[in-house]
Length: 149
Image (cartoon, rainbow, N blue to C red):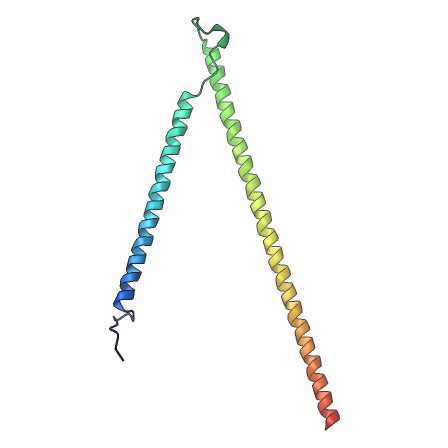
């Protein structure tokens, strides 16, 4: 029988090399995923900045398209206020959605917990019935043994 050379840790060299290769591939994959996530986030943020810059403030009057339009400081302030209120409302809606999702997740977890508790109770009841059955069976066997003896 041929003896296989083993290193001090108990692994053959070819297996150790394969494990190292797998570990390196997994690490590379994780790094690529992290880089992709960071690139995606940067792209998303740049799009948001561009969208914020190009968002109309609602100052232009579409009925006077070709004419010169002058804006009073009060009108500019009111337009900015309206934009801020819209952003605040959007943030509040997002927060509300997140809260609803959190509540649903908690309900699912609670439901799963209750289901697990019912499973455990059924399992305990089954074991108890099995014990009672075994005790009765043993008593019957003992009575039969006494009757036959």
